[in-house]
Image (tube, rainbow, N blue to C red; front, side, top):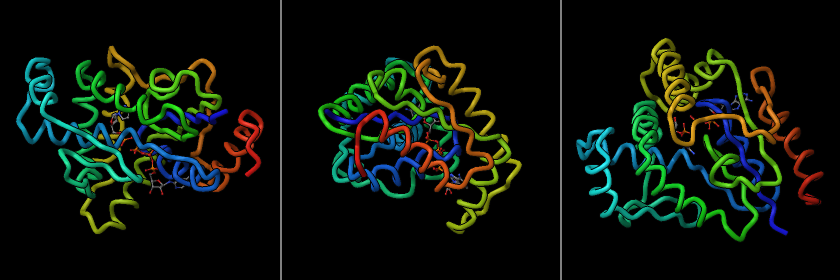
Length: 221
Ligand SMILES: Nc1ncnc2c1ncn2[C@@H]1O[C@H](COP(=O)(O)OP(=O)(O)OP(=O)(O)O)[C@@H](O)[C@H]1O
Ligand SMILES: Nc1ccn([C@H]2C[C@H](O)[C@@H](COP(=O)(O)O)O2)c(=O)n1
């Protein structure tokens, strides 16, 4: 039986870091759905599309292909790099991610990627929409201040000029947008286990989830 692990939570709570490590230790696939929303959000923004215009978004998405191969993303055949990892790309992802047309387009693709395999998928609506049948659902949270500090350190390490106050404002704005939207809002699934990583190391979070996985997926690793 395949082991499906869903990790949802707000920006900067540690989903990507933890999901990657879990997938590595368990020897299973990993999917960062935020990257897909960042790709589409940045592309639609660069095309000057109004986030509220269903017609405009549909027209552009009809001509877009997104592929996921060996852990890499491709937009119209072109490999995606770090351009989607900026704080601004996260804001565009959140803005266009509220569009029902964008969600239908990406959710279909995400379900196809997650089907018929063991996988760790992370995002905002994995346990509620993309993989509602996941055996393991984690809702990973941390205080806005801790999340902003982590993002600040991460972007500084990449040599980017960032302001902690601006990052905190963007994180609070994205939290609000992601959890208040009509379709597929960021919400803890009823059967999800909440983990607050504010005062936990990455290793402690990974170990906590591994215990749950071993119990529910009967995996030995
Ligand atoms: N438990 C932790 N303790 C300390 N630092 C952490 C912890 N978890 C993640 N980090 C660091 O915080 C930063 C953000 O982590 P990550 O990108 O995994 O969060 P995320 O939830 O995927 O964010 P987003 O939703 O915006 O992609 C990274 O630099 C990561 O190394
Ligand atoms: N399943 C998902 C994943 C992401 N989004 C949106 C909302 C986020 O703020 C934005 C960026 O995601 P991140 O890279 O920060 O995980 O993309 C979503 O709506 N649904």
